[in-house]
Image (cartoon, rainbow, N blue to C red; front, side, top):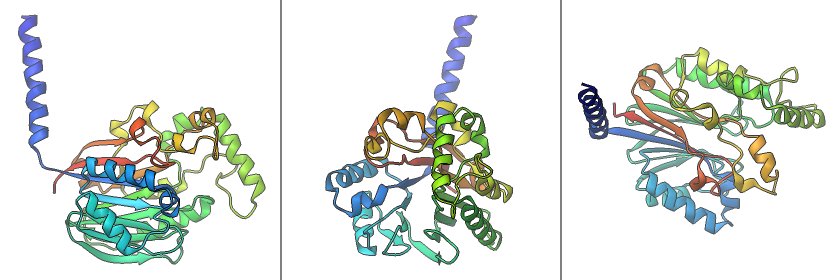
Length: 296
């Protein structure tokens, strides 16, 4: 009887895996590529990234810190991972961008009121908001989150994504953040040196930006798939001995990159991860986040 049950369970698992494998999915990735590979000078890291992206086969790819990029350069990169469509927010500073295998309809390039700016586009019937929030100030991040959620409320579409480098902590990670005493002390030291901008609120983790998105109904699609030890997207070992030592990098792990989805899209998410393994450890100071959705 036990052998029968074991066989039955295995067959059910294989059947489910086969069904999921046969289901058409849409792969979304967001990645902060760290100063555009040193403004284009780090050609070795750039080529490694191109090879990695081509292997991942994203359908929609959101990018941050496209430093030194032009519209033409982003379009050229996008071709290497099979995308014929690309759009960049701006060509100076720290741009965000979006590439896709499907046509991209530009809705808005938002720079007013934003630290780095936000790109709103429509791809395959999905409203996509690519963001890179303030790295230095919780009040600015809160304002940016309010600007973005107000724009979401104005669209007549129940399929939308907000993704990118939020530079913000999630209340869902408070269980981990409470253990990060040295990281909290690091932020306190930074805030003490800069009275104009403050990352912490009342000397503690600030959750207002992410809470603004959650209050608007957006869902963090990675959370159901991540074990606590996997919940970090920054810093990667590529930063070793630049801003932090190897031991500090391990102690200071934090999750600040996200893929947020509308309730309708979140229900169709079948896989999501922060790809924080060795294959991406030297590509950027951030790790990419990936999510697969049943194709709408």
